[in-house]
Image (cartoon, rainbow, N blue to C red; front, side):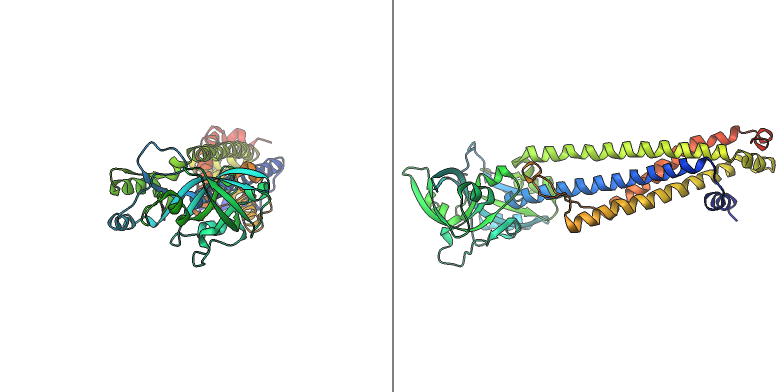
Length: 405
């Protein structure tokens, strides 16, 4: 029989507690609060970062192929990838797709309002699924229809600003020599959640930009490459760069919008701080509970020592007892943390200011490996921290302990 385990079980479930009852409950509560706070913070951070990154990837893709020049305007210099180069890029294991696009600056004049925008042109081969998720009204551009070149998608920000709705038409002026204009009909309204994008971009046909800029049928402003695993972004970008002609460059999404990704990286520090603070609070409470339990069981310790039981075995009794408290705290904390995760994931009950946070609700995302690692880390750190206080048992004299009241 494992005597330390048996005795710890009796102390934890059958023994009568006196003044240690309150501190034990506080300890269990502290552990539960710590694990719940850590799980919730990880879920919220992962969800928030995932949503922001997903929206940026939906609009800009993962890697852009552009002409290597000093052109910093919204209109990219025309380029063409040969079929051989495109095939080589698609052969990269992490590359999912490659699509053509072009941009051109313009001015919308409607309802006595003037707004400067950038027309992003796409073609029938472009994967519109990412835009589909951002669509709040109307439908995507139908490239099979005869008037595909006249269809356009505008943001909810611009639609509200210019008093436009699906089905309305307007004139867009393109500043060039000579100035040219085109009439567009609103096919759909999208919302990225990022005001910087929504106030600037509209989506139209690539063929329109080709006609306005006098491009050949095979010339485009750039190529968007979508990859399978975002964690391989840097490596994939380098592989694409190696395949490009000398006058072209590959720019990944992190370099395209560095401010957003630097901001997201800073958020990782919040989770680390919460983990450290919550773990410290839990450890302090566990040490207090262990010391009070030892004090309460001083007479028992003296009897065990008088009967010849060794210090290591007595320490294991109290370590097992502490493990019971940690386990119960972890159980309650996991129920709270995972309960919040599933509730928010299904209901989106907690909302956010979309203008400030880019999303309208508290997004959550969690992997089971996160939960398992956090639980194991708390158990490991807790047991290591309790080992030193448990050495107090070796200082207890059997004679004084037996007479202890």
